[in-house]
Image (spheres, each protein chain N blue to C red):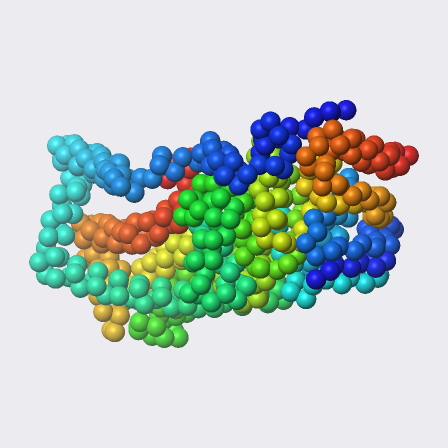
Length: 241
Length: 307
């Protein structure tokens, strides 16, 4: 169930590898945020965990059941309704036809979209689409959920709301979540642990535990956000020359 | 530095403390504000008569101009064939049972030929779409076939197959198959990459991806390929029937046209031309139009279009 990466490197043949000496251990049920500037290999790291790509160095150990994946783009199938999208995912996951409809309904209710089951993607708002995408990712029933900046394209109000939704779904389903973002406040808001990746090559350069208390203590959260932002700025300035 | 981080989900409290009910309420409020008003453009309840009336009005207008022109020409002592003459010729041919026979023969051939073209085109399209070597090799040839008017194949087909149905089918296939293949390959080329990626991370097998994701995603382009294929097939059939006359070819609409020309009877020629046009358009309107519109509406691709 644990995700373990030992001295992982990934190079696409360029002068500097995209990832170098990345060692991370993620415990079952943990919510980890990967933070970094653009081009730091965050997405590559997720692809390695999802086994969509193979590392060029080191070892990646992931749960045998595999990982569910969610992108910035909801990538819903436009010819299917919200329910149809989830039923198709259940079909890919090998759920028998008779059970799919009921399970799809449950998953839609989990993301508070029980009433939108028969709408098509173009009739949904951006936030609703991402919630369908979340339900679709959960349809795979895999212990690990990888999220690649899933809320980056949403307006601030919707994003705020989806943070609450995701946290609730995470608590209800007990998934392990690896959440990539370049938004410090988002990382502190959601993660139990925040990993800062450097750019070119991507390395884990700093790590913070977000105390559970910070969720109920706005000044503490703000202080942590400021500290991480400062460290991130330092990392970005390194590329100024 | 901020000293407070209020969030929507917990009015007056620390972040993350919202109850499930509060979240649900916020969700449905925001959904109601943001979602597309789905009650607005559902034109399913009432049939949109302007789709029928406007084209009919356009045709009536053209016929009226033609009739007026015929009257003027008649008054000047230089009579030309007017709509009335064509209608008369149509009545005569109808009484002889020739129109019915010609339409039945041609439509029968068209349906069989088009079905063949679809089967061959889909098979070929799927193979070319999967095997890039074959596609590079044969793609340009198929494009070339689309450029070549299929009437050019009629002499060859007559030499090979004689005056038989096979001649008609061959000429239809040379036009329709490349169109169907092109529709299918363009369709699969234009499938947004994120849909394939979604299928991949959702654990779809290659076959499942092809059948349940790529094929439906490619459907709009495929349907317009079919539509074009139908037009090419119908044109090819008429070319074959006009040129290859006699024997087992029987009487099709093209044959009717040929006979009108042989008899120098302009009314019969026009009558055949208009019937050919009418049958072709009728198939287009009855079969492809509604399918295409329904498909595009379901995908939200009709908004703002003038269809």
